[in-house]
Image (cartoon, rainbow, N blue to C red):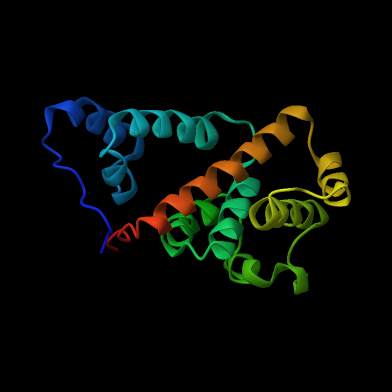
Amino acid sequence: MARIAYPDDSDPEVAALRKQIVAERGKLHNLYRMLLNSPPVAQGWLNFLTAIRQQCQLEARIRELAILRIAVINKADYEFVSHVPFAVKAGLSQQQIDAIAQWEGSQLFAERERAVLRYTDSMTRDVHVPDDVFAQVKPHFDARGMTELTATIAAYNLVSRFLEALEIDPEPH
């Protein structure tokens, strides 16, 4: 059970924002329900994550690979379970999804994917990315791609930390 209450969905202060979230996300997920405790934070979050997931040029496959790895590292089951369907749709196999936790010992990932996973690990675990890790990922992306990859990793670390700190309830299946 979540550590703080979800707000009253009928509150007129959040009605328009709730409607926007449902229109953009298909439903009001528990993450966004919780965010509605602070309408300005919910609005900013929606704008930022919409840009990351729907407006960037970063390949969906790379984005979802990084998100799943972040979820594993941060023990964010809600995030992992929520993104498996997106990962499959983006072309990751179930074998690759199952191997993300132990990717270093797996032969299922190409050089570019391994560089992304290494970069994701560094940003998530250590914050400071060593030069050799950056040097391995940089050749695979132009400046925009590196910006979008880095922002995606940063954003989904935010998501998992928010989910886990407040123990937001998983979505019903």
